[in-house]
Length: 100
Image (cartoon, rainbow, N blue to C red; front, top):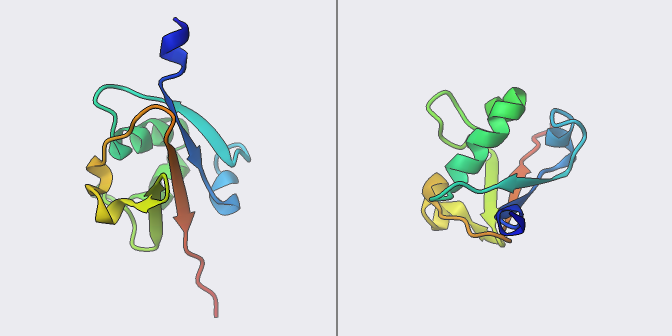
């Protein structure tokens, strides 16, 4: 059972998104097999629907002004939302803020 508990990734979100996630900036998300960025986003969106709508559009694609990084690498340079995740990795979500 302890081995299953270690099968998680750490998801780090900016303060703007944390407001719709019970003010949590860092979450531990359990991994399914095969684990992908899309799967982790689906699990978070199930618990935090507003988060889901702010990160992905109606087609399930990452919104234009949202950037996701797996251990510092932009997923757009990897396999996008199909990027595989391994236990212990960090998924960083950055939401651009426009002002004027």
